[in-house]
Image (cartoon, rainbow over all chains, first blue to last red; front, side, top):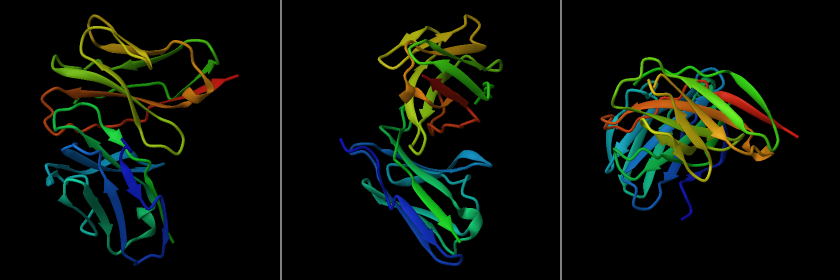
Length: 114
Length: 112
């Protein structure tokens, strides 16, 4: 299995631009998670989906952030408009089910907003 | 989920056992102890988890004290590739969301 796939691996953009991060979970996994990692705040859960339905988005920082999962094999995290403080590494993870303890993480997208 | 406390950093000589402690004094009966690690520039990686009994897999061993208030992750023969940040996480078995709350972790440096 290819594991969790994220794209792009690196993104540099200017403040005010729209940014879209993509994730393909492991085939057959029903839960998908978006995390953000910064030096100041560490690794934070932003939102997670179960069977393509958003279950908890309490970690989403503000309305500029939105996430979708149109089908079982694809999810997006969008930031519009982006700000310099959004610069971070964004990880996507998937697990077999809601109660399955092991989450498998992707390689992350390193975002820099100038 | 209960809070965990880990040392900020540790060193270990290559080939020796690395013993990483974790305190979780407020752990409750239905909470598991999980360990993940994050190698530089990579996503976190699952290592092992346990409830009461000691556990061992191909990566590591997990020793949980009888009162479950602390645990130790053991890498029996550390290599340079084990240099990473190690996260100890406590999660309830009825945490239907399977959410993981990462703390600061322990930065393990394996030295030649």
